[in-house]
Length: 171
Image (cartoon, rainbow, N blue to C red; front, top):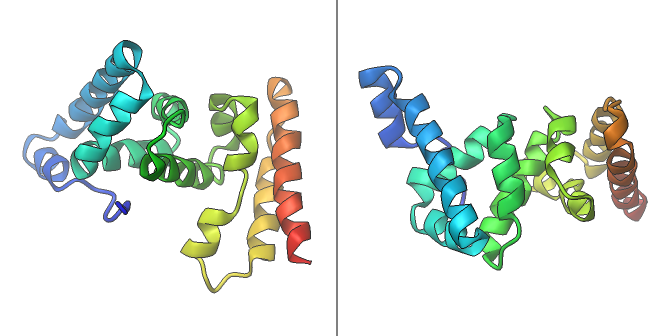
């Protein structure tokens, strides 16, 4: 299975060191190309492309999304409509991670039916094996309760309920 590995692309890193602005332009070009392909061919075609170009395209996309860049969050959320299990797992983990920094942005990017899948601590129990799941879930509930945007109230409630369900299963 493909993994995030080092979330920096050596090509983009080298380009940024040599030219300075090349990395930003490459990121913008990448998101534009992926959006165009998404509109023309749908999520499975984009995910096939990203899977073939994991280090060059998927890793930068996931990195930008995990740091709460709105167009990347929106695209990752749309690309979750796929049969590509590896890509779906990567997107879900990325959104779960982003929930800790920008929960409102992540919830805004998700259809309501997908909130429960993203509001999970599955990513954290692997990433932080020495931290009890109870601690992780309580922290995530605390973060989500800070979201006060009226248009997100239903998604926030659903997310908290999802985390609470995981927490209750641990008792």
